[in-house]
Length: 109
Ligand SMILES: [Zn+2]
Image (cartoon, rainbow, N blue to C red; front, side, top):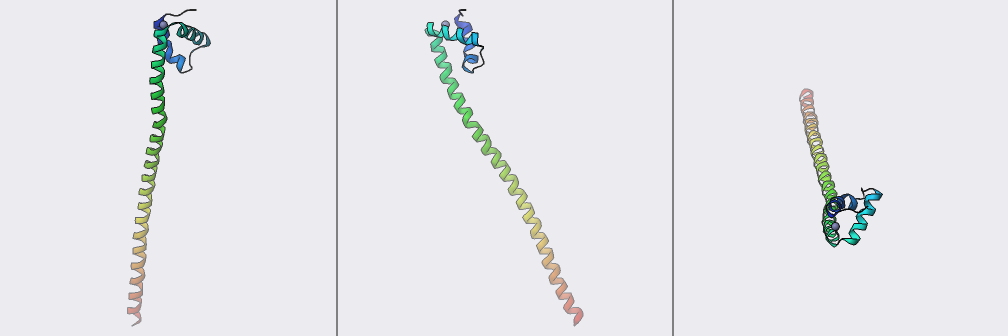
């Protein structure tokens, strides 16, 4: 089965992504061997695709970093909230302890 250039150029993406059927793969490969225009197109597609794949490879790292930063910020906010609660609790405890000692002394006097 021989393909014309338009069909091969349409198939380059699925061929390159490994989604083409065996028959399409063989037909595209056979055409690329014979047709320099399509080979050129394929090489251009390949180089552009490699760049976008590389940028996709980097993106998850950015996403992971962003997620980590978000989780870290949420944990920090929670930690700060508990620290504030503990500080208030500790202040009330100390204040009531001092108050109890002072009033205790006064009743003994
Ligand atoms: Zn061609």
